[in-house]
Image (cartoon, rainbow, N blue to C red; front, top):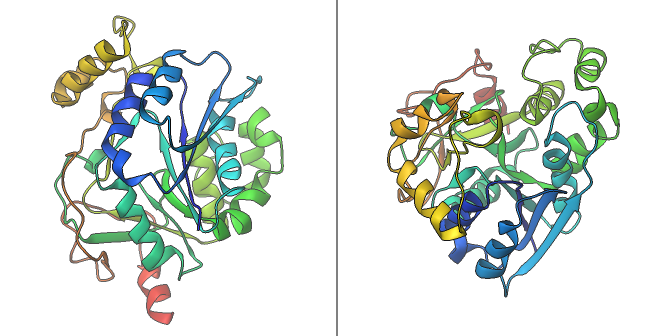
Length: 308
């Protein structure tokens, strides 16, 4: 069986390097797909040649288009590109989402025990950012209609739900209009939460799909480039110099947040915090230590699981 780890990347090669280093030992049996766009930081080439010279690696460099949101096409289309060469599931990352060392094993286990068996569970997702730094239970998953960007999705779910919804080019070229006409009854107003994660959550809402989230975070979000970084923040130099600076910032979450225009989005999870041997669903909502439920107020998730 061949499955795919797909990573969207552009201008943060030092973070791509740090993230790959965390999971390098667990990705040797995966096809690795890097999706980027014209104008990407050329140091990305050095990262790939240094870390992945002997692995099953492919890269797609997309042409930039005049889309509503920068990067949205690259991220969403990467699901379809990865699925094209995957047998069962794809694992996803973005270069500024830093995985913990057990990230791959976590997602493998979620797929085997849950995604492969329950059609209405669309994905495992990253923990909510406001709760990322709060320590949870390593063996507990919560289920909710909320989705905070997927970390693993089955090929079947992509074929059934995501691919058909991506056929309309207006998803990218006029995103608010697409939401207004195609998701008129969504709980999310058409002009809010509009980027790729908002699109996926609207699709999940349309089909009444659930997402699983770990009570103990399996990723950090640390990128300071673009809209996240203050104008005074610069990171230059060689790959090793950039990596060193970011590793220092990751050890100081408050310092990291002080450099961001969106400090609430900058969160750091422990790199080493092994998952339990089995992952249990918190069906009665009395096991999770550091998670909250947002949209499934009446616990329809429990009803669905117990019916199955």
